[in-house]
Image (cartoon, rainbow, N blue to C red):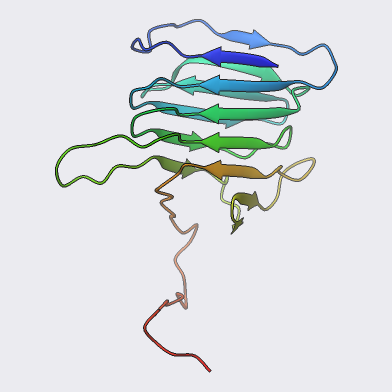
Amino acid sequence: TYIINYPKLPATNSGTVTITDLGGTDAVIVNGSDDADELWIKTTATTTTVMRGNPAAEPIVFSGSIESLRLNGLGGNDILNVQPSILQPITVDGGAPGYAGPGTPPGNTLKLDTFGNGFSLVAPKIFVQGGTPTDFKPITVIGIQRLPIEPVSPLVNPLKFDFNEKFS
């Protein structure tokens, strides 16, 4: 198991850290800080990259032989930007939300980039359709208070949810 703790310093490292697993069953755990972080998981067909900051910096690149990835936001109101992976399942844990000030609700935000594919949410997992050459692995979501959803294309007949209406 690889455990990486991002420092509580501004994102200033311009180098890339690359981790290539040599076999066995391995997991990667990446921890943010106790403050509000913006963390990124970007994926390709052969690698998964975790970064922090806005703009994203301090890249850590993992080869496809890592069996699981966990991203822990820890404290603060974190923004977690995630793309699905064909290589390994991903767990995203926002941690405890922080106080954001009067009039601003606390909460961690998951910004999901589905590469334009549809997805289903079967709590606590998100299943993104597609993936090449194999299907995307599930994303497990913990400690997330916000999941903004933007439609891929305009809806011709949008769904309407009215929880005050009785159904028979």
